[in-house]
Image (cartoon, rainbow, N blue to C red; front, side, top):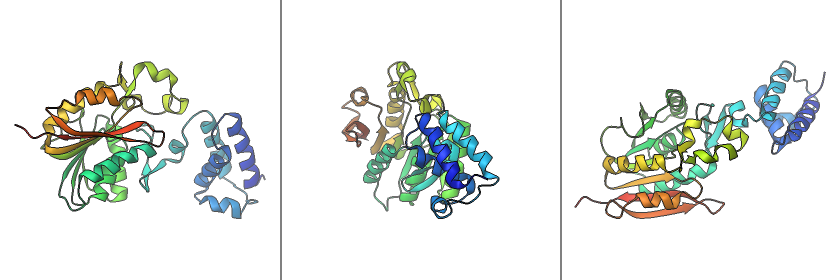
Length: 281
């Protein structure tokens, strides 16, 4: 029977031929997943027989070669140092979204009994992380997708986060006022859909990606709702799409919002925008 070493070599070659980035590492991650082992096991036992795992491994390799993201195959993606369950019902948490967490934590002191809302929670990565990093906060998370909410609840339970989940279009069903509102909303213009990587276009949920003709449509709906829901001085933290900062800034009128600034990601793009609701006068 072929050994782990042979299965890995064949899988890596198949993935490389399909243009998959880091084919050997990907093959190792998939094989370790189906074996229920750490990757170190593969190095320690290269001649082992994968036995019943061979068929499942071959299927995952085929699907990855066809474009299915690795995280959907393994069912997990790390975010802010914690494992989050993922599925095609939700966007995959990305490293740049951790900048939303960094900005949010700066606005809410560690001992503050704040009320926080995460709008369009998806996997729950923002809501769960904020609930765990700010344990005195009351966190509410909304999403329009029942499937996304079910997965977010699963992540909250697994990681020990107390969150109220609500099926809602943005803030429509979120009660009360908040000290902080965060969101990673849809922001891709319809015209850019065909240009997206196949892993994104063919596998991640369109509802969580496309915003409309300009890409600013969801921001235009969310910002007035956030202003009405935030307490005076409360913070708004938004993830931004590529080159969307000017359009979003234009929605934050000077009489309603202050302390507007952006944080750049590793590529130098303005990735996160923060603003404070002005006091009523």
